[in-house]
Length: 175
Ligand code: SF4
Ligand code: SF4
Image (cartoon, rainbow, N blue to C red; front, side):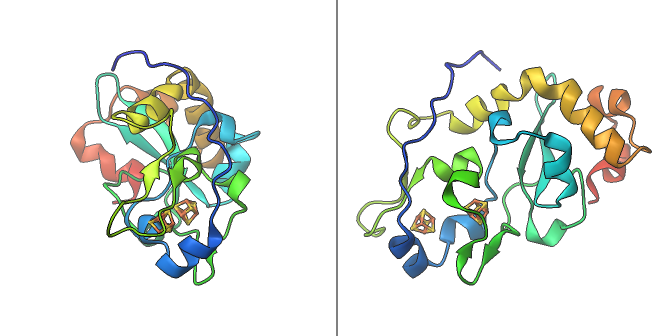
């Protein structure tokens, strides 16, 4: 993965009227990918159960945090290719806009999705927001895996970090 430009904070773009009418289509397809700066305390965020550790399966593997997938509540590590976010309620996202994952804050709702889909905020658009967010976790690998190990001591951060063999993956991600 190449080095990416630093990500700038998305401008406020909350439109509860539009998103309530929509019912959270984006949240039903993909949990929100986080930036490390979304958290003051990684361990507390993981302990809350609202977030999980997922990974970019490159070389090296890069672990990152995203909001929890509903069908995997309780798993600390969970590799997902989408899924319904556990923080979505009948009334919309359970979090205040400013507390939502970076990728959620970066999505600008569209009132007419048939004509123009919701889009990533200007300056963050184009290919690569996911890659850039994942890349932001690169310097956080030790801290993230150490936080995970304090929560589940049977998980060896070093072992996880060196890319567990496929047969071992279920042990870490609960699949
Ligand atoms: S951002 Fe778009 S897809 Fe997501 S809930 Fe709002 S209107 Fe729906
Ligand atoms: S954190 Fe909130 S806004 Fe983001 S995907 Fe989950 S329910 Fe949607």
